[in-house]
Structure formats: structure tokens, C-alpha cells
Length: 252
Image (cartoon, rainbow, N blue to C red; front, side):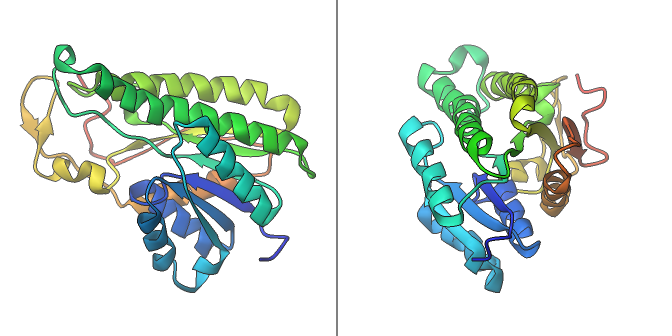
């Protein structure tokens, strides 16, 4: 691999936003470390990148496990020598159950993936970026429209995405002394497997069902690529990318 190419690490790279973003970075000439639970899904992402896939490294990872996260970052540095960019994208949701019917296990599954995983990866990125030369790097966390306004029956997902916004702000403040820029992208209705149900109608705050517009997931990928390409003297702290006509402004 070319030693002068920038290095990105993308979690949740086996599907959806993570897959689209990984391919966008590879097409833009980055070295990319792909993390996700399933090795076969990561391999499929690399295959979709065609001849650009030679600049990719797949590392099966459980982002909610500290040892697994440490091994991920060790593998990235061992292969490429440094880390310039982290996209904290891995996450999950709970079934759309009434709040009182959610189990502890369902709650903790979302917390571990969305919040603990984001923290562990950010922490490990700090450790790498502050000690490398040239020093510093950039981290972008995947927030959500739900970091601002919830959907019905989404307490675990909404709570963790609000918490991710706090991590983003804390990281942006604490990263200054290390030349680490931290920002967040809040995505609304990107056309992925996660939002397929919206094409058939999803429940609204008034109890009605409504089909919601979606947008091409590549618009998200290109937005993340733009954030990653900025010089470290500049930072997009929060960016909202959404389907123009989705019910977000005025939701509820």
C-alpha cells in the first residue's frame, strides 16, 4: 500500500451507510479499514469496490467489547502505520415495542452497540492519533435525526443517539490539545436496509401510518467524505443530511 495515502477506519462497514461510505473512501483513494461483526459482509463490501478493494483491510469486530476494539485498532496501525480518520458508524435499534414492554436485554443491546461502541472506538482512536506523527486526526460519529426528535416507540435508540451527541461535544473539546477534530453526521431516511419499512409506511406521532421519502445513501457517503477531507484547522461539528421532504422539521 502507498504510505502517503490517508487511512480511514469505518465501523459497521458490512451494510448500509457503512458499506456505501467504505466504497466512497476507497474510490477516493484512501486506505480503508472495514470493521463489522460478519466477515462475509465485510468481504462483500470490498468486492463491491472492485479493483479499489486492494486498499482495504477487513477486521471482524464487536465494537461493544474493549478487547475486540483494541485488536481492531492494533490491526489498522500494523497494516497502514497510522490512522487519519474514524467513522463511528456501527449501531442498531430495538424492536418498535412499547417502552414498558422492552426487555433489559433489548435495552443493553442498543446501548452497547450505539453508545459504548462509539465511546470505545473514540477512546482507542484518541490513543493512536495523539501519539502518531504527524499528530492528530478526525473522528465523525454517526448520530441521527433521533438525536433531536424521537420516533414513537424508540426509547433505546433515541436515548443512545442523544448520548452520542454528548460524546461528540466532549470529544471535540478534549481532542483540541491533540489536534483531533470530532464531529457528527445526523442522517435522516437514507435508503438502506434499515429504512425499507418506511417505503410501506411507519407510525407517526399522532398514531397514523405514513410513507416517508428516502434519499440515496451515497449522498451520506459523500458528505462523510467531505468532512474527512477538511484540514484539521476546520471542523464540521454537526451536519444534518436528510431526505428533503421527510417529516423531521415539525415532527411531533
